[in-house]
Every structure is written in C-alpha cells, then in structure tokens.
Length: 228
Image 1 (tube, rainbow, N blue to C red):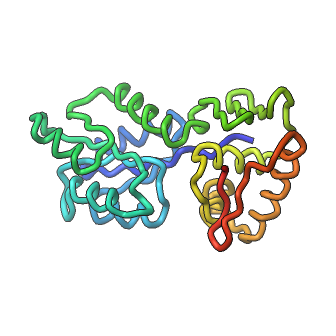
Image 2 (image 1 turned 135 degrees about the horizontal axis):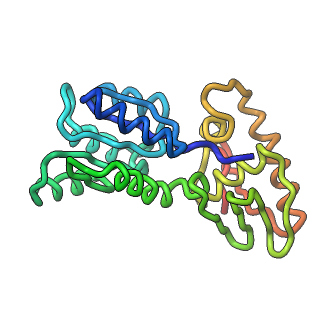
C-alpha cells in the first residue's frame, strides 16, 4: 500500500561523486536516475519526469545553470525542485543560481548528510506523503506512516491502488493529473496498464469517499482528474 518512491535525477559529471551520492540517495529510499552531463539530463527529464533534480553547475556540453533555466521555463517541469551543486562559493554565484530558478544551492565540498536533509526539505513540499508526512485536505486525512485514511471521524477502507491514487491527488490539490501521469505515479513507468484502468480505480475511490461526504474529485473533460 506504500506510496511510490520519490524519483531523483542526479546530474553529476564526476563519476566517483555521482556514485557516492547515488548510493546515499538509494539508502534513503529514493529511486535514482543518473545523468553525466547537461544534455543527458534534459533527455532523462523528458523520459522520467523526476520528483527532484540534483544538478551540478560545471558540466560539459550544457551547464547546470542552462539546464536549470530550461527546466524552469517549461510548463511541464517548472515545479520540479532543483538543488544546485557548485564549487562557486561567491555570493554573486549563489544569487545567479537562485535567480535562474534553483530551489536550493549547496556549495562543494558539502556534507552528504546535510544534502540528504535538503532533499527531504524540498520533497516535503512536493511529495510529502512519500517521505512520511501526513496529508490533510478538507476533512480527509491520509497518514502514510500508519497507512490510514479517514474522513471526519471515520476510517476509510481503501485498496492499495486507491490509496496511492488518493495520496497522489492529495499531494497536489487542485492540480489536474492526466491518466498517463497517474499511471506513472501510481502504477510506475515499467508496468503496462491500460489508461482506462485509471477510470475504474477513480470510480472505486470516489465510491468510498462519497460514503462519508461530497465527492472531492473533479473530472476535467479531456484532461484528467484533480482533487478540489
């Protein structure tokens, strides 16, 4: 019933540093995709749409600053948190990185433990259920630590797929998720499921939710589903 792992794209051209970071991220329970330069990073983003990007500034082919600029100007990727890694410690460089759109800026050499904390801070904003934070929407509460969902004072009995669907919608209330996006988030990219399966599970989720109140899920014709 667990929520899907947060997917981190790690962009670092130095192999040893890349592997150390990947090892620590995976030890924290994150799914990691590696990229060794800026052009590779853009290709990977288009393939996997990560939950967070750790991005080195100085790289061949395309700099981290340029990758950040491109991602933050695209409608489909601008909400992805980006943590910039750089040996540039001058204030002007830090300001430039943040003004380009980076959500955080970490100066090398850095503590891996501190970087992991910063990763969790960013994911708490965008994937709170995936790192154990309780979600609340109106009178619906989802507690990922205990795998419990309640509406008002009533505990709801959800199947594993309906639980993950609700968690995904509650992490971004108001956002419209297409069927393909929900398939990626809930079922995973490596599993083939017909898009119409989403409709079946949304209907099951609605049935349980509406037993204790109004239907909080909005169908956006031709686009997908949203909470609220």
